[in-house]
Each structure stands twice: as structure tokens, then as C-alpha cells.
Image 1: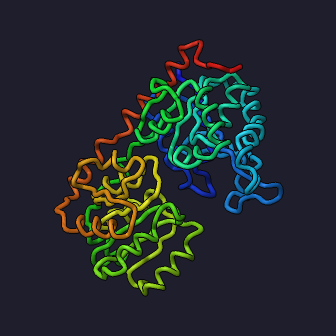
Image 2: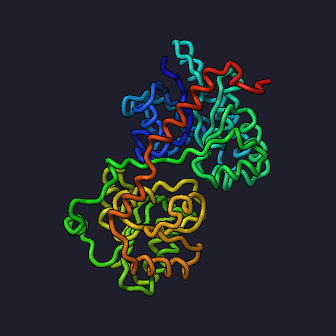
Image 3: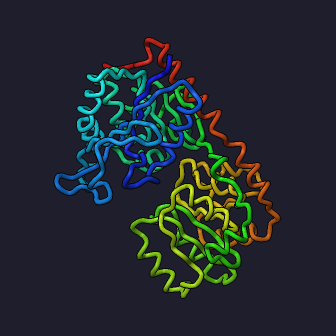
Amino acid sequence: MAIKILTFSSLYPNSANPSFGIFVENRLRELLKTTDTDAVVVAPVPYFFNLAYTENRNLEREEARHGIRVLHPRFLNIPKIGMNIAPLLMAVSVLPAILKLRKNGYRFDAIDSHYFYPDGVAAALLSKWLKIPLVITARGTDLNLIADYRIPKKWIKWAANKASHLITVSTALKNRLLALGVPSEKISVLRNGVDLELFRPPEDKNVLRAKFDIKGKTLISVGNLVTLKGHDLIIEAIKDSPDFSLLIVGGGPEESKLKLLVEKYQMQNRVRFIERQTQTDLKDWYGAADILVLASSREGWPNVILEALACGTPVVATAVGGSPEIIGEATVGGLCHRETGALREAILQMDKAECFSESCRDHAKQYSWESTSLGQRNIFASIKQNKHGLKNTG
């Protein structure tokens, strides 16, 4: 009999933003494709009274994505002052949608929640109220940043205690949970895989470069245009290296500031801004570039590294989060401290290295989705079989 899960996360793609939280959708799709598991997704959308977030303003309350039913209940999100009560507001707001599912005959074996705060804590409240076992997946900033705040930290520790099991996407994040007092046996490390069918080296790199009008040594930086991604550091690192050009792929609040920095250094002919791309299009940008550079201050499990490697493109990354776990001692990637001099040196070293496309792809092949899906399935199956899977609900 199939295992029935309720996947719960505000980090989930939708028709208005099809790339948002794509890593959550990818993992769920792989699970459903390879195991006897059924799922309904509840992906809450924030609003503040009459001020709906612009890109989600006209989002339907329900949609189907890749054959998966996805609900988008709204939850009250109070700017600036709502952080400490966000889990409660989220849980109360989405409860009617879940109760309606139950009224219509849905019975779930487990809640599959992604991102510890506020989503995981909200899911812990729902788990307590509805008596459904809970699995929470930690993904990065939720533990690397939010868990440092006093009240969210208390919420996170409470939710970790209430959950039947916890998943982290890297050993570094598991260590963060251990530091919060969570017992090791309650945590599984299940790393994100990479779609090797989608992300693959181009048949002809030169044709692809001509299509995008790419000439010379070209770096690519992929991610939201926010401070923690460090796009500005890459610009600084290559400003005195005229042989290098840079593609910045993504969107976000720092775009204007980054463009001013490019103008300041008169690099308009060397730095190009590319809007957010679908994964299908993104693979071509990876394949056309020479080196992916990731200059983040924090990471969970950086999917962009695996995607680039699968496309045959070597990587330079700051030694944070799961990046060292992916790259390890491999010659297909270089790790460095997060400052411009170290980035510059790492880029120059990778440019000089003999790094072949086949080697990059072979390294990425270690990270298929198969073991991750099997690990999830085993966790949910164990919870379903264990009548005491829901612990400490009082």
C-alpha cells in the first residue's frame, strides 16, 4: 500500500514563480517517481492584509504541477515584527485547507515539511493538532542564520523535539542540529541529487557560445541577487583581470547596486545580467561558461555546483555549508575563503588547471537521486509502521 504524505513548504514553485524552491519539488518528484508514495502539497503564500506579495497576487488557490496537486492557502505575514510569531500565523492560516482535505477523505501517514523556520515549526504545530507524524528537512539558512535568533531558536528546538525524524541536506547542517541538542540517531543526511538527464554537457560548446554571443574566458554566477550570494565579490575579484567576463544569472533586490558597481569599474562590456532561467534553459548557460563561481556566505547544499559539474563545467566556491562536501579533494573544483583576493587566486588556479568536461560530469554522477529517494521512503515507511511514530504530542 502506498505511503501518503502531506508535503508542506512555502518554498515551492508555482505558476507565478516556477523556479522558486525548485529543489523541494525536484526531491518530491523523484520520490514519487521511484517509490510507492503519494503526495499532496500545501505550499502557503504570504500576504499582509490588502498588500499581497506582487508576484503571487493573482496566484490560484490550487494548481497541478507535474501531476501533483498543489494547494496555495494564504498566511498572514507581518513585515518586520512578525518573525517570532510567524510559525503560529502560518499554522493557523493553513489549518482550514488541511481540514478540508481530511473531510474529503485524505488520510496522511506523515507530514513532509521543508525549511525549519517558520515552515517546520508551523508543521510541528499542525502535527500536534492533527496527530500526524512529522519529518522536517533542514535546508540551510533556517539553521545557519535563523537559529541564531533567541526566540526562533527556541521554536526550532521545540519542533525538532516534536518531529518523528529530521533530515538535513548536508553533514554541516546535521552538526548544527547536534549543537542544538538533537540526538544523532534522529537525524538522517539525505543530500540533494542532480538530474543527470537534464543537466549534461552540450553537444557543441562553441555553437552554444555563439548563440549567447560569449567570447573569451567566461565565468558564471547563478543565484538570487542578494548580499549573501556574493556576486559583488566576484565582480571585485576580476575587475583587474580583463581576460575574464562574467555572467550573473538571477534576479533580486541587489540588482541595481550590482549594476552600479559594474559601472563604477567600467566593466559594462564584461559583465552581463541574465534574468532568472528555467532549469531547461539554465543548463545551456552552464554549458557555455568556463567556470561556475559561487561566493556565498552561507549554503545548505548548493545545487548549482552539482548542476554545473553535470554540464561539464568546473567550479570555484567559498568553503561554506555543503560546498566542501561536494567538491572534497576533487580537481574539478576549488575552495577558497570568502574575500576577493582568495576568489581571484582560486579563479586563476582553476583557469590554469587541466579540468576536462568528462571529469566534472563523472564527479556529479556520484550524486544521483536514487539513494535520497530510498532514504526518504524508508523513513516514511518506518513511521507508518510504528504506531508510536508521533511522539510527545502532549
